[in-house]
Image 1 (cartoon, protein in one colour):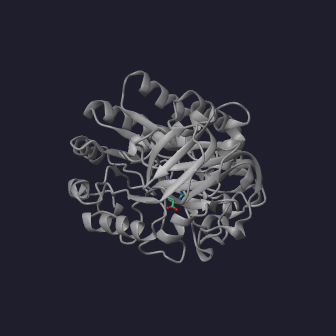
Image 2 (tube, protein in one colour; image 1 turned 120 degrees about the horizontal axis):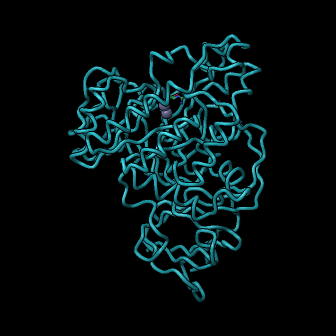
Length: 435
Ligand SMILES: NC(=O)N[C@@H](CC(=O)O)C(=O)O
Ligand SMILES: [Zn+2]
Ligand SMILES: [Zn+2]
């Protein structure tokens, strides 16, 4: 029997307690005596214990672009970031649009063994936006797909979106929408449309291209009685729509990325493609609205949209570079520094937005649970006072498109425990007591 004792962690930032883990399950929580023999002990004095983090939105690139990331390297980055489960988007090659493809992602995740890798199924075949994929077969497969998304592309055909919502309702699924009206923001659009895009001569991506799709989708969710999730919200107007829809009782949830909470469009002035991302970085007013919406619960989740890209795809002129940036290893530090330190969120809120809510939205029962006896031992220990300076070169990701290189954050993941096994630790004092 493998036993692990976490000594004196502040549960959700509250009172300290000991957590005893046996065979992948939390057995006891409280004040425990001497550990006895054969117990691995983690001294968690001063650390905060959260339920293992869950990321609703990552790109792991396997199959097809293993030069940018694999399920194994992405899982390693996830463990470093405090994650115990990640939802792997379907925009791989081939696309995850069949039961077999979804099961393959699941199996590769299990083989890597560091986090639960949960496949997201495509909404439409080949992400082409023309014909629904095999949603029911993916749902009934071993992978039990519950989240469907054409992420990278918008499901822009209202009739298809309506059908998809009706379909997934039958098995409690959800559609995660990449909201980008392709007529208002086409594939070349790469900079928030405003004064700066004009000055830089970059094709503009107006906020309204996101907001109109979200407005349409919440009405389709109301009409169908189904569930919609808005991926990577980037504008204040989208926040208003989501707030209104929730007030109507519409079943909508929303996520924000660490980069949209922290970075603004003026970073594009140097034309550095590391800041090229979809949706684009927005002005400060939007960033502030996003922070406020996360704090007041209008936005449910922080998801990274971890989007690794190989050098040859990213190191181009701005207009030719790929969209996307890394996020898994740094998300908790960004949220700690930007949201917890100024008092916009407390650690119980972080547990909600980075674990409980994403697990619930994605239908994962083994994650996001209270740290109490009987729960699976998915636990993240955070050192709220540790300062870390991000070094892109030391990333576990296979890619280097890291927008945080050189930045210092206060608050860092200390240890990640996945199903009772330590998958990441910054602590050299983790020890096995003599048996
Ligand atoms: N976010 C991005 O800029 N890129 C994502 C796709 C996406 O999330 O839309 C990718 O797959 O690289
Ligand atoms: Zn997207
Ligand atoms: Zn994405």
